Length: 219
Image (cartoon, rainbow, N blue to C red; front, side, top):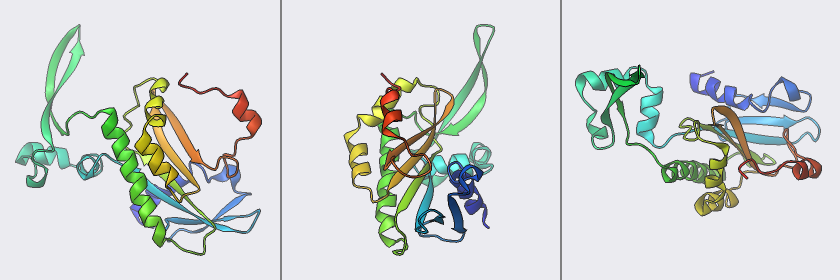
């Protein structure tokens, strides 16, 4: 199994793990459209799971995933195809109420809510399009999005309202053929899962009674 597949399987196990192995069985590790095929042991039906990482763009992905790339650019200069997108940034640390320079790094410009939402919308829309070519024998498909940007990591959970209030994000979700979309992220320094689609079935099914008991976390 490739490193990429192993990483995807780690994300898959956030949901389909030993806690529900009596309900679901992974039957195909080598599928590519979608990434995994799972059997519902209750119905016998097969469904697919597509796993993807979310980045702002390919340059952000390169900085996060390519070992040594920042050190290489600091030594040799920013790659030609990244000029105008990536820049040098100075790093400081606060000691004894004073800021002390500690070095340089390479990064993109600072991102805003709109950049974050656009990245999520783009990720969903790209997978919506690719879903058309998935295995037609599957009952349905699910989409797992692993947030590698974590824009909300140090923000209050109330800031999640920016996602619910985004018309273009809601449009991408409503137009999605995926039965469920799982979004794994970090909010206020805590791991968080946002789930949209059919929440009445699946491993994280929520009853109407539970829904009534739980208030919106950003109120």
